[in-house]
Amino acid sequence: MPELPEVETVRRGLEQAMVGRTFTNVILRRENLRFPFPENLVDTLIGRRVDSIRRRAKYLLIDLDDGHVILSHLGMSGRYTLFDGEKVDQFTTPNDSDERSRFGTATGFDGRHDHVEFQFDDGSVAVYTDPRRFGIMDLIAIGEEAIHPLLEALGPEPFGDWNANHLAQRLHKKTTSIKVALLDQRIVVGVGNIYACEALHRSGIHPQRQSKTLVRKDGKPTKKLDALVEMVVEVLEQAVEVGGSSLNDFADVNGTLGYFGHHFQVYDREDEPCLKAGCGGTIERITQSGRSTFLCPRCQR
Ligand SMILES: [Zn+2]
Image (cartoon, rainbow, N blue to C red):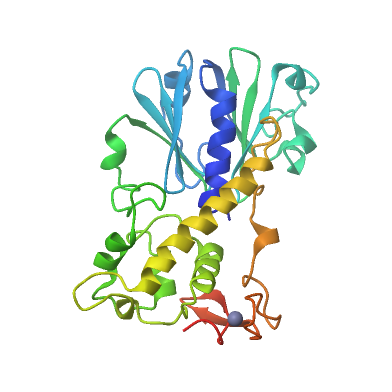
């Protein structure tokens, strides 16, 4: 499942490919993803120019020049693939083009899960592929994102002015474990399972530690909570960097690209030695709220 750094990578790729271009056609190959497509999606988009692309948590917000915004969430398996005009011309439309796109193996699954095709005035095409169809595509008016039912309850973004004081305010009465709190999108958005494990390890905090024990009696963050916030931002930033370097001239804006896999220090490393210098511990796996947590019991307290 794409996490925040992957979505940010996709945002940057789409930004390069779409901003300044005008939709000439939109093909929908089905009526819905997780929810039905808005009825006016195609009519609204044709003739509109893309002005900017923003991200809120794991939602992409594609701003159009008439004040509409395409709200796009990749769900479990959604991704975009971009083709410039020359590349598009190399593909021929299959006879059953209602069911599959012309892009075949270039987007995977023989084109059978290419549910949306955005065509632009320079001949380029952005294809949205989503085999499991948990993705979301909606159309809202600019400004509505603050009151949209999917977005209104979201907590602060980890990038920006978020800091340990903000987190301490949210945690000072919380008896839930710090790992579970980090995954709660009302507390902070976009810290998925992998990055929560990594940030807790780097800051030496046991994932089962009660959240409120990281807040001082006067409501200020403890040193450990300061470190945690710093490490959350660090692991996410590093992952965005890795993702960014995997984008080769916007040819492939793929939700599965850019995973921070080569840099995991605890995630998916059960029974392997802790990589912290001088620790000597062994990584364990436990389950919290149905998700795997990886930790080093020796250096995480
Ligand atoms: Zn350790």
